[in-house]
Image (cartoon, rainbow, N blue to C red; front, side, top):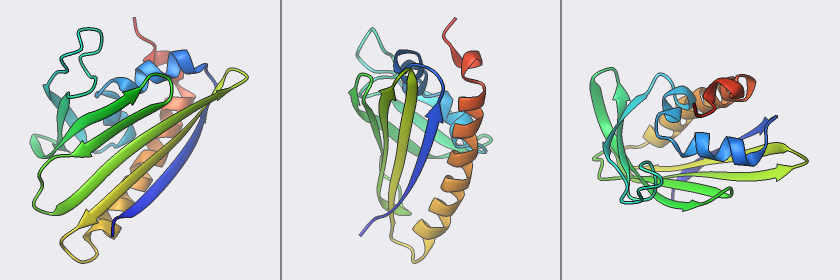
Length: 149
């Protein structure tokens, strides 16, 4: 059975500004630092190259040991991604859920992980929770610098 973590973040900006920022693969370099990513497949959607079907490889420095694919986007509501084949993990799902109230965006970020190696999911989720909590706060504090140019 997968283990999971959940992070919540309030962002003092409207959802129509926040959601497109989180649709971009590159934002995960900030959210999940020290992990970094590179897009290896763009989506077929000409309006959103980071949309459903797009893939990113993630890792530390030049070693990118996992690949994730965006599997679902509901505009201004939901983004989901899953890890593709990985020998250490049998299941991985990330879900970002968005809600706006009075011009403020509320983000709920959940990550599920199941490993074939005992305690591996627990250790990795602890690191991801630390990174994501830190990264989400950083984005919320500096939301203006992430606006599309």
